[in-house]
Amino acid sequence: MLPQEEPEEEIAMTYRAPVKDIAFCLEQIAGLAGLEETGAFPELSSDLTAALLEGAGALMSDVLAPLNHPGDMAGAKHHGDGSVTSAPGFKAAYEQWVEGAWGSICFDPEFGGMGLPRSLQLAVQEMAQGANMAWSLLPMLSQGSIEVLTAHGTDEQKQTYLAKIISGTWAGTMNLTEPQAGSDVGALRAKAVSNGDGSYAITGTKIFITWGEHDCAENIIHLVLARLPGAPEGTKGISLFLVPKFLVNEDGSLGAQNDVTCASIEHKLGIHGSPTCVMAFGEKGGATGYLIGEENRGMRLMFTMMNNARLSVGLQGVGIAEAATQMAVSYAQERRQGQAVGAPSKDSVPIIQHADVRRMLMTMRAYTEASRAICYETAMATDYAHAHPEKEAREDYKKLEELLTPIAKAWSTDKGVEVASLGVQVHGGMGYIEETGAAQFFRDARIAPIYEGTNGIQAIDLVTRKLSLDGGDVMAHWIVGAQELAAELALQEDEDLVAIGKELGRATKQLGKVTGWMMDRMKESPNDALAGATPYLELFGIVAGGTYLARGAIAAVDGLAENPGDGFLKQKLSVAAFYAANILPLGRGLKATICQGASGLYELDADEFSTAL
Ligand SMILES: Cc1cc2nc3c(=O)[nH]c(=O)nc-3n(C[C@H](O)[C@H](O)[C@H](O)COP(=O)(O)OP(=O)(O)OC[C@H]3O[C@@H](n4cnc5c(N)ncnc54)[C@H](O)[C@@H]3O)c2cc1C
Image (tube, rainbow, N blue to C red):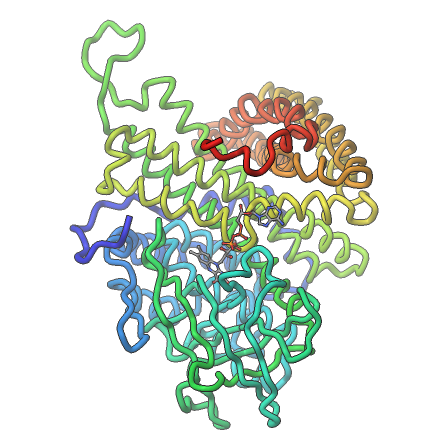
């Protein structure tokens, strides 16, 4: 669907930032309290976490969520002079974001950051993404540029750019994609030639650049991948450059406009409020760019940004799933159709009374909470990898982060689409009509499995690089941990926990066997392993979600022992039990598909796929 000219009348959006759920996940599942004990974050406390989540939640629920549907209808607008006007209300909302310093949570205090854990920044991001995914991409891209500059920028680059991007006064973008270079980034052709004064002249066209041009920030700092003359082919010959929209004078003020323009913006399925730009660099001779890091090392540097961005995109799946679930629940509580099974009354009942609708809603809630748990577990691994007092533990957490990142990205975004689709289904015909907003969630969710490395590429990354970390020990350690948890659950008194433990035990055993097959095939016949990579990632995601929800279930049972009437904890336990009984067994059915090998996929020649035989 193309953005329409006039915004429609605002519809009632139901999104309320799930502050309590996120706090539960961070504290009871992912281990935020342990992070306090490391001493690396002196300001961190449970009171601060609560205040921060509450404050951000209010902004997302009250300011960003109401702009979501109008932003979808109006979209961003491109003008003949290359400028882009953001959707109505987006600029003012961004000003509030900057005022609240919501983009500075996890960054270096030397440059105006708050020096708090990354998991808290991501929590704020999840809420922004649930409230308004199109808008949330603006600060998300800036966050990526901050990470690159912090890790690889020179002192001068940091002094000039970091504080401004951290505060949000300036925004950042990521420029990799070209028409012939998508998943295969090494095929890119943008050029960089030294100007002889420390700067470079950048020429070339980048496509699909998120928030590449807009009116929300004073300056836009583009991070651009390009090739130097004579650079080796492929990813080994790519360098990373910083290209500001406005050049920056020595005193920090803005100077002349750089030779970079937005040629057009794309018409697309969803996230209409996010301008997806074709960026033309150097049409007047060369955009001025500055090298970040060393020549020909750009790809490695960009991975700093991409790995973190992958987790952020995983949380887009979670955010959209949460929003779609909230909307579906509220519709199902209101919409009346049919009678309750076995009830004497002929009165119609709210559809939430029907078993099939309940199945949809429980599945939506279960996938949302499982993917949230996976994402915050990954986020916490990044924090411990930075903050743990012992070097060996820091290294172990880094490897856990690496192992889990493709799951966090791919599984959570696949589930985001699935949950948003179920949300449409719960609404019946009204779900297909734009008015309810359920369709927008489905359309918006669909990009997340594609960008930031398609989910197919994530699955390949998992089986080719991540399973072999430390010769397979990292994965083996993860499976042993999940099996120990399953055994611990099976010994509990609580019946729900015992049932969860049994299912988790079966699922982890299965994962162990299939992982062994994968690792063998990777050595002996890699295409067999690649053929099963996506269903393997699905299995790992299912088991990881079940493992982390089981941790939450233990905490819920402990809490309920003290306060049996606690509805929130009852919900956490019910969802974990539903997941174990209904979702974990789905993993068992995947073994055949994962271990099928590639031969069946190559029965037909490429031209035999066409129907005109
Ligand atoms: C709305 C939107 C916003 C975006 N934002 C940005 C941005 O800000 N910056 C930026 O640089 N880019 C951005 N992108 C680009 C995005 O990252 C790419 O679209 C994505 O990486 C996929 O590349 P592609 O579109 O060329 O697809 P292709 O690479 O052509 O892939 C097509 C299909 O083939 C599969 N495939 C490709 N190679 C392999 C392989 N080796 N093995 C197995 N399967 C393979 C893929 O998984 C996919 O299913 C954006 C794209 C969109 C649509």
